[in-house]
Image 1 (cartoon, helix red, strand yellow):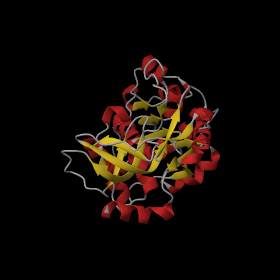
Image 2 (cartoon, one colour; image 1 turned 90 degrees about the vertical axis):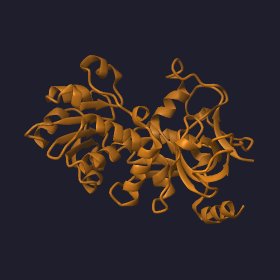
Image 3 (cartoon, helix red, strand yellow; image 1 turned 60 degrees about the horizontal axis):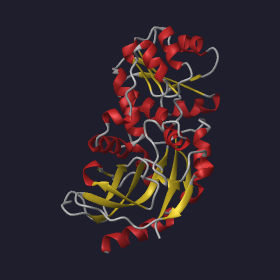
Image 4 (cartoon, rainbow, N blue to C red; image 1 turned 180 degrees about the vertical axis):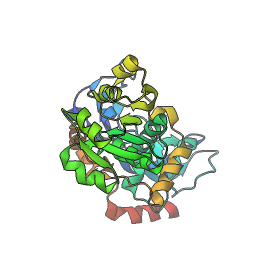
Length: 321
């Protein structure tokens, strides 16, 4: 029987269960996808805890996970843009952590064969989110851009996307991530008390734009340092949006399968790297969320639903079925 991650009450990672479910059937215009890798994201924990129950109430037993990559396993009526066996990247809120998912065909992006499943799965969530946040502050060649939480899943992609636009990028993170950020071409600055002074020292000619992925007063510091509010984007501080009028563009504001495909091509060409922190098997989904909720992750955490050793045989089976 196919498996899926479900929870039947609000709570911490302990409420997550891997349960057996029927194999779904695609309807007209839909595609059935055999998921290979699914992402794990901090915002999903908030939904599971009931933090956003007024906005996005759960329907128990609720599914979990948003971003995934897998093979097309079956086509619904009227689908001609994909074939069984094609590799795809998708985004399905609260459904992605399952062996099989049904997705509308027109929201899937092709996965280039050159990139790994682990790198592909997060692109529809953290990849698009990073692109939205960077695009919101409009960096150009010669700008100095600060990214807070620069070693995290979104931050590690945002720093690269800002650099691709020609900006000098300063990334705030813990001291253990300094060498990692340097490897991405980023100037590391330690977060914590005294951050404003350290940023002044790192950017003596001033800061042009600020991407906040972490919250905890980063927008206050950006405003204090003279960054114009329209060139500040926060993903984690709604109060600062109301207080200063800064921007808060994220994945839901810009998502298209075409954008996912463009990001995937950047990865395939070696212009964008998706750092992977840890790959957990689906059965360890609780531990995966415990790790992501600590907020000290370097890069992305993902779930593997098909072990690497089994992937070639399963791909061949799908294509010859």
